Image (cartoon, rainbow, N blue to C red):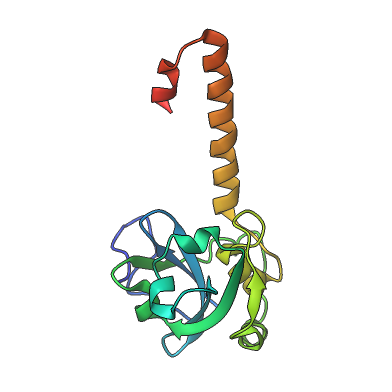
Length: 166
């Protein structure tokens, strides 16, 4: 189901070929690229059935992934999603036909997967822009640095109470 959050894209906006689709999973965001006619291309874990892979947190910890073409509604399931071409202001999208051709060549291919350097957001932004980008990674690294900073302060103060504020 499309998201009803006013801060998100208008749910009445139908995805167009080449659009980035952000799917809101309980613990993370999954990313896909819209191909058209209800189909997307996305990364799924190698060792899981297609149905199980759609909502698995295990996918975040896999080292390999398979590029699959699937129906958007099946991948989304009961989660919400939005069209989110958030990098268009800083990166010029490739021509639609090139985006789709690049995507179709990869269907059913096994690719390496790394949460920090080669995740599903990197994959779809590479297809759309010719450059891999992931804001999720930047935010995660920033949170880890903040946590490390707070731990250092707590150790210097010899207290654990300040961790409760994180």
